[in-house]
Amino acid sequence: GENVEQHPSTLSVQEGDSAVIKCTYSDSASNYFPWYKQELGKGPQLIIDIRSNVGEKKDQRIAVTLNKTAKHFSLHITETQPEDSAVYFCAYSSGNGNQFYFGTGTSLTVIP
Amino acid sequence: GAVVSQHPSRVICKSGTSVKIECRSLDFQATTMFWYRQFPKQSLMLMATSNEGSKATYEQGVEKDKFLINHASLTLSTLTVTSAHPEDSSFYICSAAPGGYNNEQFFGPGTRLTVL
Image: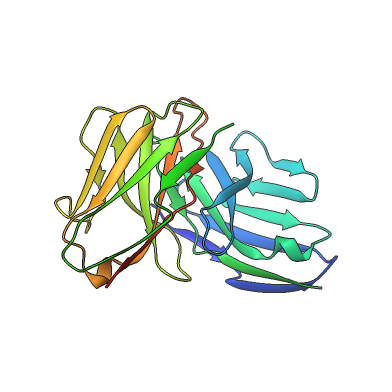
């Protein structure tokens, strides 16, 4: 299965607050879960990723958590800044080669 | 490291003409390259997967004779939109995968195609 549910589709937060985006997948063979940030008119940029043998990974203000039992993974952005405003996509790889399955995207707006 | 370029960044063409888009991995060898298209406010839709030296694998519903993909080297893949029509107008994005266990993909900056 290639289904990836991503929520919410839009998210507005005040500068300094936290933002959380969640994705749910169906393929239990999934082993790689990247998150991408896409600014208007640009290609997706990898911001953080996690593999199935790890439950959480953090990089400064960004963290990703993975719950393999529930088949969901989440992106956490703390102390949000206006430049965090963009569309964020989750993705996963099923392990059958490198093919990615993408979520539907979340448009994040950080209000100054 | 892991930089992927695309050329051109934007192109406007007349209906019926063909357009070629190049995707290059600048500082690594890509065993696999992917081509996506993205409509406004939508997610990326995989069009095809190409491995160096072999024929591309197209996703269901993608016409292989219309979207010609060539992956002649480990650093270059091209997508040619043949006999373009206005409905082909879209944002085309490539990605390149170094291969191996990591499963990572690195994306190009995209090409905005407008067919008049």
